[in-house]
Image 1 (cartoon, rainbow, N blue to C red):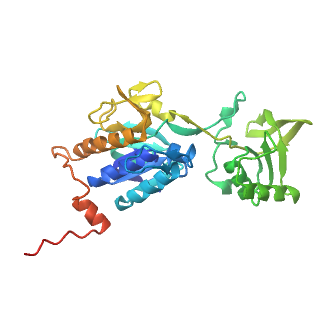
Image 2 (image 1 turned 90 degrees about the horizontal axis):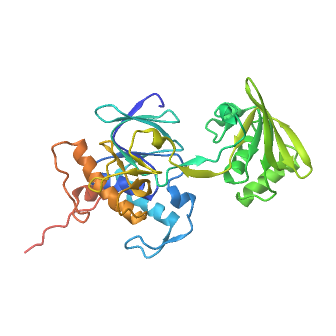
Image 3 (image 1 turned 60 degrees about the vertical axis):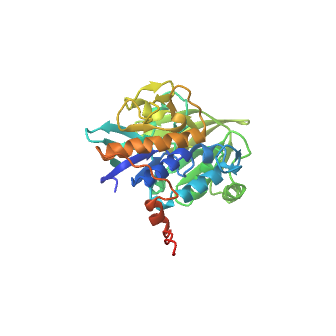
Length: 348
């Protein structure tokens, strides 16, 4: 599948609330979309930063949590059958004269007539190690995410971190790796208690090591990282390893978007206020990622931007045809997708 090119009228980058609502607005106009997000779950900032915090400024919803908003949006876009590509980051976007050739870091390729950037504050990038020269080993013996766990079979693995990702992978990989050590800077963890208990049981059974400390240096040869030094309260500990997995959380950054030739304003993208189009025709930016005079970083503002961007894209996809405004109360498309029967005429 990674070698096939997926053709689509619209590719949405970002599965936060604005990206999800973009699916809805495009769907009303008969435009089906694919949506890509570097996170493995939909929701963007709502899911990553405040899933349980109340939101009060969504019209018609006096109060809902971030996760409830995402759940409702997912239910709202069900009729439009969007295809999601999660855990993938868009790496390149190139104008091909009739649209855009887009590729992700997982090898997925698209040919899209329009592109919508709904990346919020940018893609969530892993917090990286800052030891000199260690970046040369990324995707070889140093990884910030696991794509193919079977490739770690029989290897000596050290995992750094204390959150859900670190603990989940610790428990998942222990049965297949040759040796395993988990290193966290403090003895308490931010992961689910049940997963922590599973890890502790593995340690008690002698199946892995648990070390409280901080990485101070690494060792490497021509083939990659061979070991790390952990500074602990009892002195340095030397660990041998073939693979180093780092799960120190995520931080929002503009990421590859900065290299796509768009008009960048600090860490945002300049757009017009008619179409919310960027400096590249056919690429739109909505939500917190964009900038224009008077911009307010509110979810409801992003919803408005998604609506206008959808109409602009529809007219680009079908040149010479005016995109017709349809109210959802009378939209034949909505009625058809939801199975709503038209009211029968009144009998005299």
